Image 1: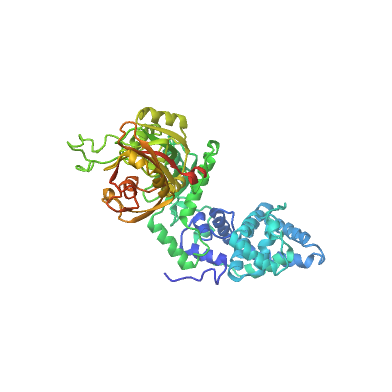
Image 2: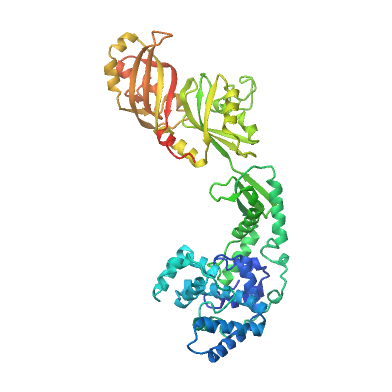
Length: 588
């Protein structure tokens, strides 16, 4: 399509007239093409005012004449405010109070939009001053426009050349005056601006949609009637029906727009050079539905939260349906595991890959249960959720117990219909379900950010183990005779460890450097005096079994090297997982 002259060369009303002469647009879709101009307005207000001014285009000439006449008749030393008031009276007499107020409101909006275009395009001092004086008189849209970060700096720079340095203080104060009076910011400046910007030309209007008082929104070639009040309310009704049985406090609205609408709008903007000033249709759909839902749900203490919403409401205009993404609930706690041979997470049968076979008794699992299942199984029904995920801060071996205060974990409850169950209720349900096998202490409701923090630091913290060790060829007494030397050797000792043979099938073969902070020899085991009890405090991520055995030289140095005898862990308990950096942090 041939590109028309855009806002670079032509007046805003001329662009609007050409746009409407070639495209059927409702007020919302018209206003959206200028949606990044003059903050604090709806696109419907922008479009409606521009269309109204085109219908009343002949008034411009009358406004010019009255300004000229008023300028001749009024006393020259009269204050600008008095001269402007006099002009307003003349205009009200000519057009009628109601008609003039309606026209002047639309014209103020137009002046603000044109001022922002000229200021941003040409760094126009006159345009900046127009917005400044409008803002001083509490014209809200002008004030909001001046507050915009990039605009604010630009305005300050331009206005400072005219000796105006009170922009910051002016924006946080308020004054009272009528919002429809064109004389708000002074007769002389308004007169000059009206003559320079509006001119005396007549805008050609070739579309019945421009002059029609009632715009039939159904025929809008972009939104196809979506922004009709009845349509917006119908969509909100569908959202409310869909959300009826879902508990949530925060939400955000998203949308899926048909590709042909997006392409059509891009084509229009490219043709009229409007991309710099336009807002995307998705943003308006989301905002218009969102603000209506906020009004409906005001009594329920619900609010929009773009970053951490409980619920994402999707207005799918492609399928003409409402879709919901219920975001997970996260709960943090610590678990203890009192029995061996229970994995932390579900472990599929390797023979049938979880499908079920004779070897796994058709359960699809290598082990009957897991820590994750013992924790999640009683919780998922309470939240009326679809599923759940378990996230531990590291993991102990299947044959190791987790004692002490337990290992930190976060459970992720997927698509829950309930979100705020009492922690004591959840904790009791888990502990009754896992009685004798696990026990949990729930810390509180958490977040995905907290989960990432916990997972990221799990290998950088301190852990304490109790290992029951067999030393071949030496007695416990012989080892204990060198207790001091052995313990001293391992004080803050760096250990270089290649990935152990036993996990090479699922872990990358790489060198890890971890520190043993202390290794204490506690003497013979009470159940079997031929075995040695060893307490080890070390960095997370250190393979303790290989620290003892040496793993055929892949761990260096090792306990076996120091005692000069083959050594092996026969039982292992985790006594403590110290996540000090996290535990002292913010759990929100």
